[in-house]
Amino acid sequence: MTRHRLGQAWMKASTKNLTTRQWLAIRREILGSSDAAAVVGLNPYRTPMAVWNDKMGLTPIDDTDPSEASHWGHVLEPIVARDWSRQTGYKVRRINAILVHDQIPWMGCNLDFVCTTPDGPRIVEVKTTAEHNAGRFQDGVPDDHYIQIQHQLMVTQLPWAYHVLLIGGQHLISTRVDADTEVQAALSQREQEFWTRIQTQEPPLGTASVEDILTWQGVRNDDTIALEMDAAWHFKRYALWSDLAKNAETEKDTHKAALLRYLGPAKKGFWTDAEGFHWSVQVVESHRETINKKELDRIAPDWRTFAVTAKTTQSVRITLPQKTRRPGDESGRLTTK
Image: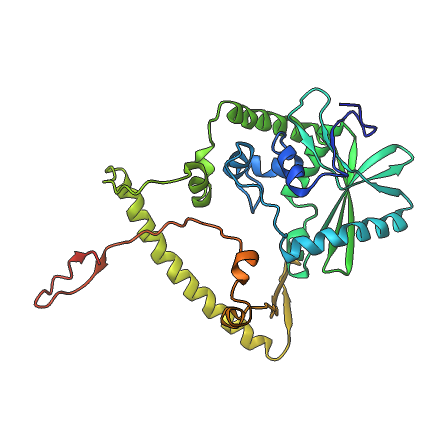
């Protein structure tokens, strides 16, 4: 490795000529900034166990086409950076490298952009979001983004970074994020503990989701087993929460319908409470294209051989006892269907 010009970070690999699969494979060798918030339980979309599964190679590398939101976010990033550069006067350049800490080889990051200021280079983290997510940014940089940037500042040992956010394609917000030594100390400790779990192959099961557990357990046999008595408590709690969730969904739909009545023919409505917080209801249109498989079978019978990618997924089905009345039986006893 040769020393990269940015801060004190080393360049682990150049990403200029890497395929998506190669890039994702190298990222498995480090704890990156996009992993940091998940490791400390502040990523709303990813658990610590999901990160652990990925680093252990249990999750298949997914180099398929990204979601529409991810695609447009990637397309807009350089445009947002360029306009922010015009507004601030700071020259911005993309960093085509995976960087690592000069003393901690597993602590790394893959930056979006860096700008040149009179005080030296500074990180520019570009984000885009839809207008209906604007409330998440009302109080400034959200926790998961803040932790991501603090991790980047730890790797590079730079004093501050810029969080540049485009909301709804119309509103640009730039926030300076200074290095927080107290947060970084706590984050470094938590990351070290997590990396030790990877080295010792000890999964953080306490944070695991159903999908995390399925990934960790891997291929199954066809056995049917009798569960231990401890499982009874979880069955009963599952049944209780299932009833609560069903009732909650009914209540939510009732209030959603009421808000739609208030909305009338308008597409969006808002209400500002006494504390100045904005609440909104919006009818969002989505468009999806479907394929007529019967028509494809007619005009191109062999289309599945070159156009279909097979993928097997697992889900968990829990069957609860149902109260039924048998003929001549008024007890309402529990029976399984």
